[in-house]
Length: 427
Ligand SMILES: *Cc1c(COP(=O)(O)O)cnc(C)c1O
View (cartoon, rainbow, N blue to C red):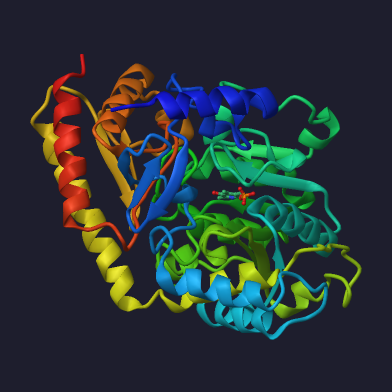
């Protein structure tokens, strides 16, 4: 496989971009070597600058549930662009997309669009603090909620991959307002509420964690968290930036039957363009300006291109698509488990719907502490072999593989054949 053009492109990139990238995980810092520089995508595939084709399970880290450049989404963007790219005024498209969100996500009555998941989480936290008159936030180790100062403690994949416990530049006073408990650990969560309950504005959680690798909620964990929040007068925020419109039409809250007070969304909602959103009950959301006192704004919020892409994507997500995603993902999981069983290597496959992580661990982890026991050298070796065999996986043990509706049997076969070869060479 030729890589010369990608390498040259990365050399040029490093002259003008920190690490040659605009988001750290893309640099391949943790697995070594240069990343393929992507030239284009179509359906389940991407092509790099050297013309190599890969089955893509990065999927832009979540948005591309319909695959790359789905015709309906591309057409919607082209049509919107022809009518003007931004107005700084209301449009009917944003109301149409908001209506779909309200229809699908059980706990959302009003929604505010922003430009990223980071902004969504940051804004939901501000709203929760305003609604409760309290300052503390409870988060869970390994859950990522974007890079806002107060939420960057114990934040999973990107941060973990770099071995940084926290980011530099976050004032201790901000980080001090965030309490961290272990994911899936009910006693630890109860004890956080015993110690701080009256001061906790909100607990924020990925209902199905996707940023420590895929780690599902144990039965009872989210239900107990819901009760603890209610008893303490704290709000519960589900960060559904990954799980929204993916694990079910109405996200994890529909799948699991637990209702948060506030929900953050992003990724799929923008159909590959920059979007985030936060929403919840009417009386909470009416605390947001211009109705209420919580200020939050955005020059490009509700951008017509992003709204059109999101609308075309959500309209494309019917029951048949979710069925197809489940069946493709289940076939991939079973196939990978067979590859593992036929080898001497300890590994396990954790999956929730179309989110999957192969952990180099004997059993699926329940927490970030367990996930961090995974064998990093084996992952690096595996990742490199898969890439050489034309399978583009996230370059971190702590990221999900994103399966799309464009992945077909041929993609799964190629991936399993590559995995069989890769496992055959793991020491
Ligand atoms: C990706 C992600 C975010 C941040 O979204 P950005 O658009 O990258 O700012 C927040 N929460 C979760 C759960 C995510 O996976």
